[in-house]
Image (tube, rainbow, N blue to C red):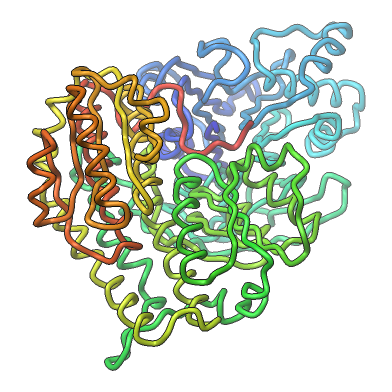
Length: 622
């Protein structure tokens, strides 16, 4: 979950590294550090600077210090082993000061290795597993005097259990940098004529300088040397092919675009990015609407033969999966299960060769989801991916799938990725339902046409942002919140509660409204706001009854309702209206007020919505 960045070339390294850390800060912001290789008449040395807190604190720390260098590595940390502190911040030096290393991941057997190294006389300055790794590489060099840096790194990594993405420098080899990965993402940017190279946890720090990237596979080691071709080796010492790809990433999406926070920008991005995600997939030829997905065209028969679909995901992606379950069962009549990837991978799931496992992940690097699909693959299931990050680990592990194509999401609390995932499930369910004959032409045409109107309807909700901001000020006092919904809106209630928890630190729970009487109603009083996602669709009359029950107990009610619904206005204390649409499309609209509400509550409380405490964007470690 940490972010690493490295540079070697002819430019000044420090500005590139700092800008890269800012773009990776969504991955962790407990501390940050940079190591620069300094060369003078006395030889080569590392200048290492560290600071607790965000990257801005590191910039302040570096002012007035020697920053001249054309080679360096940097790190922004999400703490695992060891509290956030300067001594635990990366980069870490080996005891001799010859090596410096940054690391994203967890070395699970670090304690055993540390004890062995201490018995050999090595001393440690931090509590991290990362320092153990750099000392282990140093030990390999000390023991095997003829080892190159690549050989020492490989020797050390073969003794490690766990996940890692690392970049290492050796002051005795100042034209070279070594990178490696297993279980944590790592991308290498290749400059013109190999004059410069970039290393990063994802492509966001790289695209400003080059579009040519190489995605390292698990258990690969890369040798990055100034002016020479990139070399990649497998951990078993065999040489691997170097496959350079062109990354398609809009640099403008990496800025706030005038908004105070990335989260607000990404909420307001949704009409445009959903339109982009439909482009080339939702077709209007002038006579009829249709959906064209390459995954269905190329793998449709296999998908329709599925005994069942099993959706594996975490967090917000799991909520999208609950909606996907309803869509696929409704339009394709294929049974669907939805599993937390973290639970699925650790039990002994029953899987058949004719099952299809759908992995849902914004980053495409979620550790538990990646492990779940590897398990499913071993058991012979087909793997289908719904991911946002092109070239990510999950995307490369799958047999086929759909890219969300909503652009980079920087805010830690997911917004546009959620609606993008739901949109992908909707397109997939419609395309498969049409292909297997479950949807007749008339119904299919009506549904696809309504889908094309969602971006404009979504914009009408965003136009109410100021009204939702005023409403939010009423509820900043709350310490608990209850979110309730039925049918298509039940997963939306879960997602709304998660958003509030993530960024405002208000305890919130999402429930199916029918379950309210099975326990949660005991919590309802005048201090407990209850938000009902109560659009004019399935279970409407029953959710009205649920609202009456809360009202009778003095609870304060916020309702998300369909335009023109006056009955709800007589019950609820506050109503946010959304446009009418077909019931299965409602989640794309009903979630928007919940995103805005959580955002404005957090801002009113003076919190950093883009970087909520203890969280990072991409969970690449267990």
